[in-house]
Image (cartoon, rainbow, N blue to C red):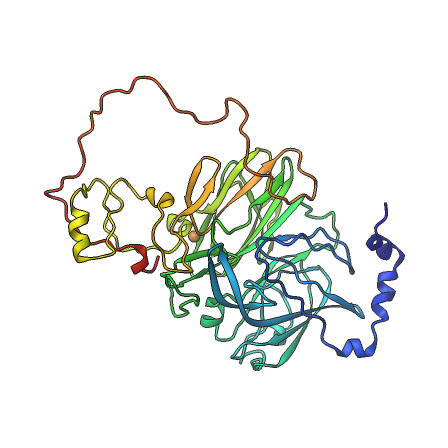
Length: 457
Ligand SMILES: [Cu+2]
């Protein structure tokens, strides 16, 4: 069956339609669609211009455009937004078109782009097109290549996308504040020939980080290192979308890093190769297999693999503090310390004292701790076998047989075939020969306050 879109494309009617845009319309601003739902939008199939296989933005969407006499016109609106970081926590951020990050801009190599940027922030801004090779005056560095865009004004950027690849946009104006508030978005430029570099599933997200004090809603913008929310697209686990993948699919995941530290991104059950950076495509012969790739600050990497191993595979940052949410850093390690009788005595002096960590911190995942309003637990999420004890930069690639080609619905948890699941050994236990660790007389005690009273990470 021929769809209307294919008909338009093959008949050239789309082109005629574009040419018929009236002068009044040409002079008008294109619509600026907004979205506030935090889940992944379905792929945006191109309604005009050259064909391509669209990407999926984790917890995000792609920005629709209009064709105008051969130009693809987009409209970005820089504005304050409310973003759900994960169910149970909302943040006052700055973003574009209703969300932080802003929508992904998708286009095709060779496309001519006209991007209208309206500033609804309380201060001036600009947009820099990170990695895109364009005329100097379109580079968006406030003060250097253009005047700042004052509040209430709209500027226009016009350039041709000369190269396919993975890029991003963000302000180059009061960057410390504007990026710390969540202003950024991804740019995906598809090859002109849709058969080139084709994959079956193409995902994209940006990494960002916030410091939001427990109980607060607005990020502390002066923070440089001690963040407590390590996000993918301004979301933390368990709020990050899963990546449903059909068994045998070739998968690409494009990742950008706009935090202020590197993130070693690790995937389970598969080895991948880096196929693209923000500098362009990596030649086949220069790629090598990895299961972890360290993502530098201010850079993008696209990883590719064939999903040949069914299951629920973790994908996460390998810095263990980046897979948890707000907590204090200053706790002494209490493993092996016997708290018995001590907690009650300390609690008389420090009312919110909690004995924690004497058997490790895993209990925190299941513990119902009193938290200030609008604060996420340090570790949370539930899997098919119980508490997942994760937060931050963590989600699951769900590789399944029998998914539809473009089916992105959550297939549920993996059902392990018989004989493929770790199991308990039920023989007779040997005598415990290890020495009892810890000793109440010699251990040094310090008051450990609950996470409610501490910040940082
Ligand atoms: Cu990390």
